Image 1 (spheres, rainbow, N blue to C red):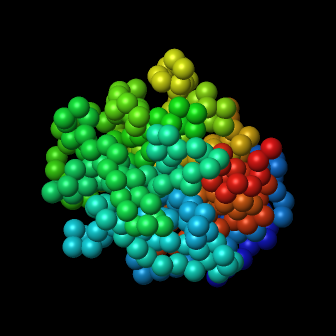
Image 2 (cartoon, rainbow, N blue to C red):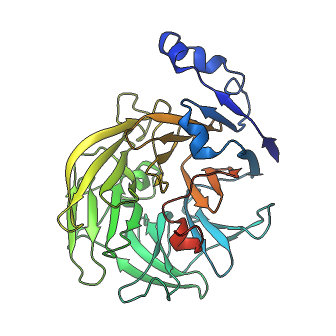
Length: 366
């Protein structure tokens, strides 16, 4: 494990006239991945807290820490999907215990879950959020024999239930990420081509779109299109904005001129539709994959060198720099975990609280 107890200031005025400035910083001029907290703006200290400490927790010989990061209260653990290895070894779920600061891990798989990617804690129709423990809902990318689907799992009983397997009879390509609206219960999700790009899904048959699904009625709608590869999505804490990332700069190969952007939409029509699409942010390194908000409305996204944090106006406040691609992150009370496939990182003692921490952990609720 490695520890860090200080921040590094980035002089954005100097960077504006010296493209090599960033690479010359000791914290970023590294050979092996290492974690640093890079402040692009003074507000970064307010978000992180000046006593925040960052460290590497795990460095494994396989891509155990990729997507999801769902909390299960009964065993006090995060459930993280691994990256695709082969069709002979379908995607594992890496279970990270929060009972110890060593964060011990184990692997598991769930019935009917072929190739898991993103996910959300899920309250089925009729469940009472203050009484019923949530299930976990995974974006199953499918394979050549099984469709891409939304699959509900109870990690405590090892039972799985398909929630959505198609769009009015048409197959999805590779459902990527999902959020449940905390008021309506609707499921908002993205469909991308990464199963096809990784050679375990057939050629896509419909556009890359964002969908809204009502589990209680079966109603499903396309709510946004015009993407190359829609990926991560997240609601603002007031639920008035939906953020959606487009990772079209990575397909079968890197496409340097492809989108590496996060778009913002107004959530309108009683929380059922989207309007007023606009560019929120563009990642200067790699592309924004998993997207999350804190309770102050700051937007956190895993990008090509770690986690980038923007305020609600789209101004870059700072980075949790790890020197390699991060695919997602997960908040817990007073901390945030950063996933970069073989490595798991944590920043502890942070001031920010994830939008869903109150609901998931039952702490930090005003």
